[in-house]
Amino acid sequence: MKKVISLLTAAALAASIMVGCGAESAAPAPTQAAETKAAEAADAKDETEATEAAEAAKDTGDAAAASGVDVANAKVGISIYKFDDNFMTLYRTELMRYLTEDLGFQASNITIQDGKGDQAEQTNQINNFINEGRDILILNLVQASSAPQITDLCTDAGIPVIYINREPEADEEARWDGTVTYIGCDARQSGTFQGEEIVETPNGGDINGDGKVSYIMIQGDPENVDAQYRTEFSVKALTDAGIEVEELFLQRGDWDQAKGQQLTQDALTQFGDQIEVVFCNNDAMALGALQAIEAAGRVVGEDIYLVGVDALVEACQNVLDGKMTGTVFNDHIAQAHTVGDTAVKMLGGEKVDSVIMVDYSKVTAENAQSVLDALS
Ligand code: GAL
Image 1 (cartoon, rainbow, N blue to C red):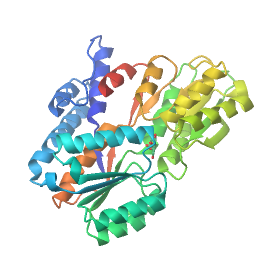
Image 2 (tube, helix red, strand yellow):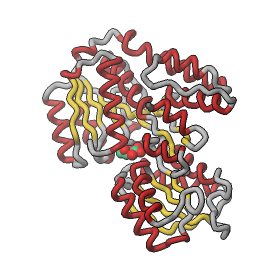
Image 3 (tube, helix red, strand yellow):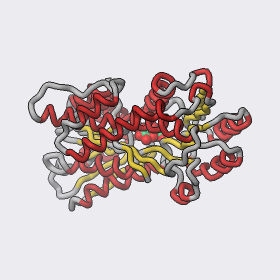
């Protein structure tokens, strides 16, 4: 497995360290040159991290220029599991921008389709891409469990595939030979970071002092490994820290804000003040949860804690304003850039690693402003 250090994470880290030292500087906009980010990352105290970030910056800058691949004429097929998803909307927007503005792909040669949450429909789209003779496919599967079938369709047709965001099973990844890859993040890390954000509160999440943390869990789509791992590892971070936990409620909210609101409202009605922590597998659901929390007259940071994942701008603002305890940055920018750079390599016939991971990072009140600055 290859690991990519997120440029934005490195920049935010450098900025937060600078803020910690009393400087007024903010992290740069993500559109700035990779070299600038590398230079800023070099300010970070952790030299290893800064060096790795500098290497990553260099890789990004080099990818298109050094490839010699005729990207302008490359025909790309992209299918997103559902356009109506906050995080994947940010991701696909940055992916299209990076492919066309930074790498030189022609927008007219890229077709991006909405899988509409329907695997049968998405499989049809993929078959059409194959029949049209696309040179490479970038696929955010509706159901990651369809990967074996989709991989066979594409490899039989000799078309390289980059899976994104929804990770296939390990035994599927194990049979890939360099022409198929998964680019994403290790969801275990995001769950652990969420749990740690609760552990790091003044009372370790035990607001009522009864010796245990009573929580509710608003889950994403449970078919998705992100939902499974975030659910498991957020709680594990508490138990690993020696904290006793009590699960009051666990329901699937399918990554959706309205469902997050409804489920949190239901849980608050049923369990009231017993709820000390609301874990949401993503920020969209956490934004919904916050609406329910406020409607119930509860106050985040005083009588309840709330964490999400993604670092949507609205969520980072809530963290800054104390309305959310924390979130975790799901770096759609580094992921989109890694996808673009890897696509260029694969189009050039280069074999790539089967799994390429980008790091998550914590967003708390201390660094939310620098993450916001970096995202703007
Ligand atoms: C997750 C993300 C969610 C949702 C999901 C879709 O990584 O945190 O907000 O976009 O992917 O698969």
